[in-house]
Length: 243
Picture 1 (cartoon, one colour):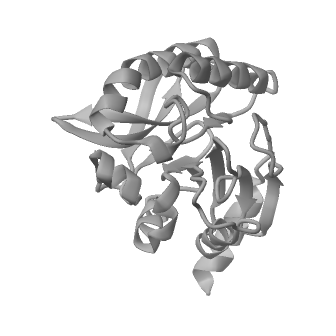
Picture 2: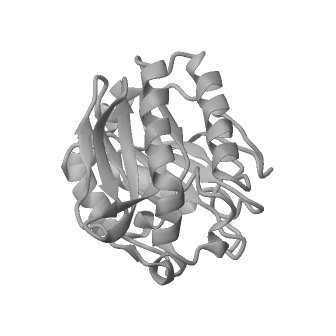
């Protein structure tokens, strides 16, 4: 998803994408990190200010659009949530208007730290009608211990909302997320938020045996879909656990 200049424009774009995706009757629909926050992350200065301007409307949006698509789980990207005076980059999972669970990003980038975002601590894995899913966010992909914890709790699919900075070094392909998928025996669903650069932020569906689908390099709204072969994944995990 390409980020817009206003909260309302971002929510409108997200709604359009979700409704278009829902026509395919998917099990899961996922949207990017900070999908509702206007402008690029380079402009983040105050987590408190961003939270006050975007949190309530974003939370309401996710609850309402989840009701409109009751048969699909919605992975609600992330939003800046206040919790006891601290602000967390929180990812959420929804079904039919109800919050199934949430995860607070543990591994923050420098811009978030300077803006006053707090670190989460706990991995998050949730049972769904299809399988167990784990929620991680962007730079969490660099934390091997956190990934291992998430997988040890039973996650077979890991949703990874990400956001691209214009200063991010160029990355060819998806080397880190491919490594995570193959070494841990999980599907990684990488969901990108781009403003003016797709460096490191390109969406992709990644299996332990390679990339299934990915978006182009163009920084624009795109939808990708994939059928996940869960029996094949489970066989892969059995072999992985024997080695």
